[in-house]
Image (cartoon, rainbow, N blue to C red):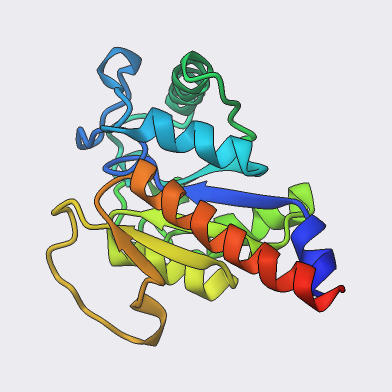
Length: 204
C-alpha cells in the first residue's frame, strides 16, 4: 500500500489569490496577476518532486455579479503563462462561482465546491486519478486548510497575514505552516526523503 501511494499520481493543490499570486480582490485583469514572492522556486521544486500543479479557487465575484464566468478563461491563460515562465506546467484550474448570498440567481446557492468544502479537490482527483492522501493543499487561509483536510490531503498554511480570524477546529489545523511556497516545497522535499528512506528499509 505504501509503495502504491508513492508511485501514484500526486498533486499540489494551490489556492490562487494570496497564495499562488498576489492578492488583488476580485481581480480579473491578467496584467495585474503576479506570482507571489518565491513562488517560482517552489513550483519548480514541486515539479521536480513529481507533483502535478492544480489551482482551486473560490470566485464569488461571479455570484456577486462583478464579472462573468467567461472572464475565467483569461485568468486561467494568464496562470498558464506565469507558470510557463517558471518552466512548470499547470495541470488544471478549478474555480467555484457560487456564493449563498450572491446577486446572480443561478450562482446564489450553497454548494459542495466552495472552500472550505472539498468539492473542487474531489473533482480533480476523479478527473485525473490523483491519490489525495499523497497530495498537499496549500493556501493562505484556514478555509483552504479545511478543504484540503476534508479531501484527505496533507495541508500547508502560508502564514502571510491573510488569515485574520483563526477559528481553529479539527479540520482547520494545518500539517505545516510556512511563509511562502518555496519554504513549503523545501519541507515537502525533506518529508519525502524521510518517507523514502523508511520505505526503502521496509523493502530490504
